[in-house]
Image (cartoon, rainbow, N blue to C red; front, side, top):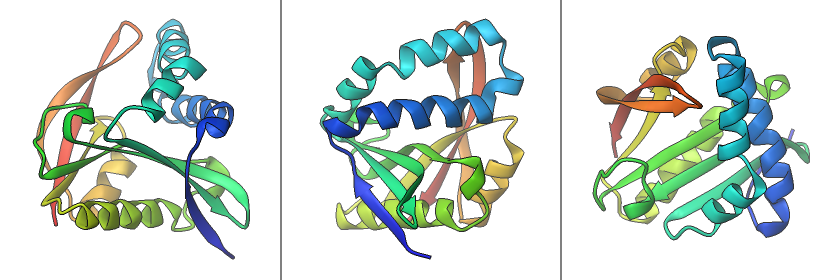
Length: 171
């Protein structure tokens, strides 16, 4: 099996929209009212919004492929692009999603290791992320990778204020 991680371009936005909507719905759909989920997907994952994010200074998107099949994606932020003000010595993993049929194959860990490489290459001292309070498997995964909780914030999904735990790992 071959794994490849590639940066996105404007041509990738339609595929980014599809995988974003699918993976977010699978991860959060059961715990979110349908109207709130639909509103969030329409706003956060419109092609216009994703194109704007792709062009935001300090943000970068990557697709991960397994045997040339799109398996997931990653969004990283530095500086002012971070979703919370964490300073210039940190890198945020804002989104890390793997399609269900590719889970438990080490691809999430590959994306995490790629993010760490990007952070170290940029001279960052720490990497951080937010994880939904009810996503226990993800919390355990991040703890196993050396993350620990340091704060929390509200992540609105439509009109549903959900709580994310903020986790950090020193590099």
